[in-house]
Image 1 (cartoon, one colour):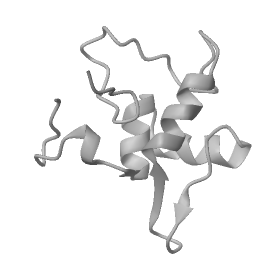
Image 2 (tube, helix red, strand yellow):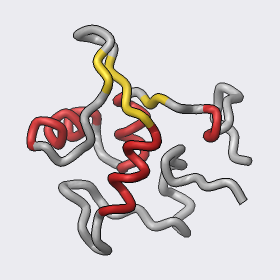
Image 3 (cartoon, rainbow, N blue to C red):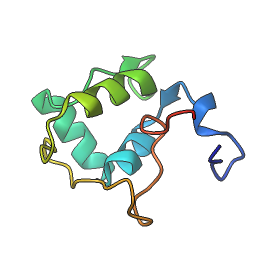
Length: 94
């Protein structure tokens, strides 16, 4: 099971910060906000104006519904690319 720098496994993450979503999609944080404003991302949970989180299951379902080659403004992430950041929403238990 892949581990994050802070010792958490991907399967333990239910909620993702904007930085984690950006890392998963290989885009900047600003691009995540732009995609959300255009309606190209699932709606996050807003605890307050500054505390916003995405459910990893919502992000995984959104990624799966994209047709091959469609990225909605993100750069495509290949599963075999070692430079692609690990994404909790893409990690599946064996």
